Image: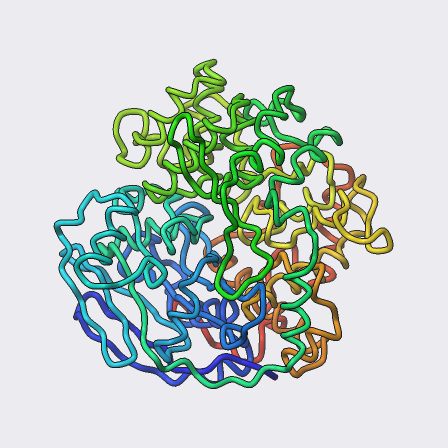
Length: 561
């Protein structure tokens, strides 16, 4: 089976020490990326760790496909204990950092402990440097990136940095790379902030030699020549469809259609797009560099989830205002989905939907934990009672845009996802709109009978995150191509994904998660019976992984076991 190469590099902030560990056996079982990060976290993070404590670790990791020139491979993974969900979580970022990371020669990098001084850590194939960057305290993402470019000759594509949001431990702070791409959901930027690490930079000339089947060229060619709407409008291209099927969350989830959708939809975003944008080695180029000449607002996006959170869910029908919200989140280092939903909850409490001045002011207050921003920085799950609004979250994570009240299988997916209400964990929405060929589509109504497909899609998405392969490759990847690229049967590959999902669930079980956490803030038909079907398909007991269902290499693993 194709797998990543290279040792684990541990960066111990308490001792300013580095250590290399052979993790070849982990790569053999988990390929790379999210699988390797999850396996290492399961072994090395105590089950009772505080997400903001020094005992929590972050694991940065790539996969073998970063040795290819294939489209859809410009991504990498970060895994750690989330301060937003209080569970083990992996976040995935695009851009250009992944191949620079691979050039270090390391298969994974662990950041553990905590520093007394604000640090940048420079990881190269010829050594590691801990740099005191106390002068960057409070700096925005662009100011931080500019510092490294000017003072160290380190490009934005070699950096993972936090903004004020991370430094101030906002529970949904991001780690930003290539300046505008994010390890977004789950607040791993706040973990770096708690460790007093402003930036991790990477580079070298020691990428491992990994042979990949020539079919990569076919995928790349098709990605370059396909006339896909996402090349023009990114994920926001689905907004009109969502609105038509009564599935666009609006006014803090109180409505499911938005009368101002034309002001924030795919056409509106495409009208502001001024050039192509892409990730490393990808010819699909679905990113959205946008600019408004009149106001001078420039950003990358918004994508669908952000156009929902800061648009329809906040009662805003002006794409330029949403662009400004998106850019503020990028500069302050905040997950724009969670930031937008949290602001929307505040707007609901204050009866201020559509107040864009208040929205932008509140984003800054959240990042700096000033005034009301200090409470809102805790996220929807922890602040909803104070605001007097409903708790639109699962396992602490607020909802993505794809509406589970209409796409019931997606609703089931939100309930059982180890990451909480995240749309990318299984991308089940794609078979219910549908965005797939008719023969692969499912009736969006009902939850029963969907567990088998949900487990399959969770395992497949986990496999992509181990690879690392972008989930928007779905129109270009099939069973035969997976088998050729990864030199293994499709069943073996899906088993890697299953092991990864199981380890995440087991870790979270040790922290008290069980069936009671697989819940939604709304009713779905036959949800309890559908949960039973899902657990049976996984071999779990009421949402808990039994000992005999643990992967064979993990029977005694776990720093807290």
